[in-house]
Length: 99
Image (tube, rainbow, N blue to C red; front, top):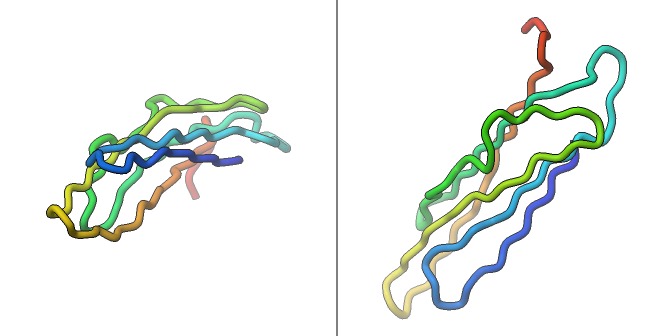
């Protein structure tokens, strides 16, 4: 899987969105399809206001899933906020038995 993100951070706004794309770039053996679920979060000083860019994320070779997540941060006037964003990508193969 190939994962790409992009965002434009506004200078004065307290909210922003990030575009997330996951693409299935190869397949082998019996794994011809995947289900991908992504969840975004951020550290102290930030709130993830939309954590899931898509629902029902079925993928086959050369197919992509794309959507946006959103964040909010409102430090006091004149103050700076430092935080990190993070992601969890949950991937399963339809019909597979968990071991």
